[in-house]
Length: 372
Image 1 (cartoon, rainbow, N blue to C red):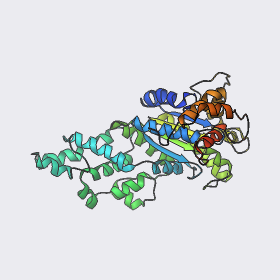
Image 2 (spheres, rainbow, N blue to C red):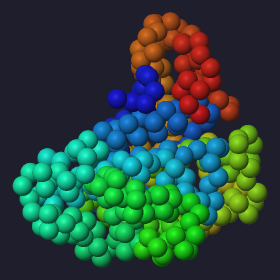
Image 3 (cartoon, one colour):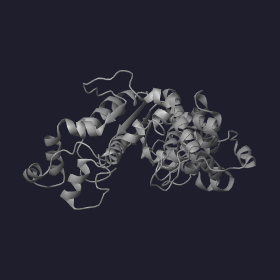
Image 4 (cartoon, helix red, strand yellow):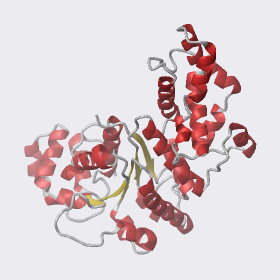
């Protein structure tokens, strides 16, 4: 199911990315970064939402960020934006379920069956044995060398709060662990008491994200689909966030780091989206930051569509077979295809995509019907 109503998959982009990446390469531990470019209303936001829905159905964590609403700056700021879109409680629950299984209580339901120790004792297990089993139930987090010990400790605190809620509330460090994992400000004293020494700076944030992805795979998770929309806002214009040249360069560097570091982050699939000026503007767009531009722009230009291209041009996709696409749009939104064919033709140029004009005319709604 998609996040928002009717949807037409232009060029089969969602189907291809889902089959070739979500269900195979990325799910198997690979990583990928893709870009969507297109005019206002070409369907970028809508397509990103559809990808998040598919990814969630496939067992991925999903997070959606808009550069128009959230500051995309240094990597630690990007990390906070990512974690702001995730449910740490849901992540912790995954580890609690696995810990209960390892403690010999696969049928235990964290959050419903009370205290795991009392649950096991009531079923005839000796108290000393139960205590020993619970003490080691989350040790598998420390056995994976690619998980930073502070991350393993934080996840242990969070998961333990599901297994022994009253005990954890009195003696545990759940709040400290949750604040730290989310990138919040946590004093060094509280971190030391909780056994978490790592600071969430631009370097620590990368290690935490990498460790979280490795840890999630230990409990059956597939990875993380991250979508970052409205990247053209970095060039200026409307939005809740204003980017100076310095902040824009910080953001471009964070994206560059995400692309490079992502190769060592299993199950990470990142989708960026922005209007054409993000890609074409020599002064303020991607081309103004050479270290990022060389990672995004294709080395070889081809007139033939390549489904594996890192940059998908939605305007070009719609243009290649506009009569068929506009008929599909009409059918998806419940309008008469004949009326559409008689009334609309492709707008070759201009700041607004014909997709937006057509859908607004069909449904009679506001500008966010298809997404910018």
